[in-house]
Structure formats: C-alpha cells, structure tokens
Amino acid sequence: MRIRPYQEADRPFLRTLYLAARKATFTWLDQSEWALEDFDRSVIGEKVIVAEREGKIVGFASILLHDNFLHNLFIDPEAQGQGVGSHLIGIVEQNFTRTGSLKCLVKNQKAVSFYLKRGWETVSTGDSSTGEYYLFHFRLKR
Image (cartoon, rainbow, N blue to C red; front, side, top):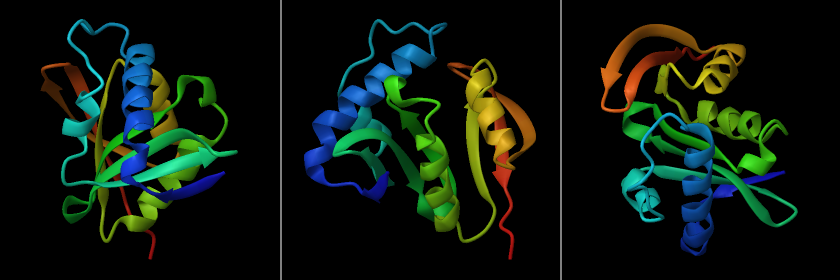
C-alpha cells in the first residue's frame, strides 16, 4: 500500500470513489441529488492524501490542517476491511500538531467502531442536517 499526496490527475477517480463510498455507507440518507462534483466542494482548502494499492486508488483522506480536523476518510467499498483506512488515518494523525478532531454520524456504526478502536475519544454529540453526530478527539502522544 502506498500513501501519497493528492495529484490533480486523481480527481476523476476520487470523484467516483467518493460518490460510491457515500452511497454504500449512508444508505439512510436521501442520495437523489448527490453528484460526482460533490468531491470537489468537499475538499476545498484541505490537504488530501491518497491510498493506492497495485496502482489503483483505494481511498483518500482530507484534512483541514489549521484546525487539526479530519474532514473526510473514504475507502473504496470493495477495499473496505483491508487496512486502507488504518494506513490513511495513521498518516492523518501524524499531520496533527495538537489534538485532532473529526465528526462522525452516529448511525455510521462501522466508522464509529473504527475510530474508537484507533484510540479516538467521543467528547460530545451534536445535530447536523444529515443527523446526529459524535465529535471525536485524538490526543497526541508526546
């Protein structure tokens, strides 16, 4: 597995991956207006890192560096459960300069379990247009 910085040539693949992963994960949400271009809006101003296996893009993460905030972590549905997310989040955690944070929808139990196993802590809950979410923190070990 190779984790590398985003390149503009990745955009078509990441658009497709983002849409497919969202549709496979967020089955309870209205997906009727989701589009490939949603990826573009979702990563504006963020550092994007890409996971490749055997030359094929299998996942990505995007981080708001100045906020130490993991905004997106999406894995190709066919590659889930194969360590891609663990590799990506390991790199994300190395990019944090202080306590990191992320929001995860409560109904996304697979992701909630993943973050808890990685040592992230639930610090609060909130409501968004897509449902209730947990705010997670990752405390740097110095």
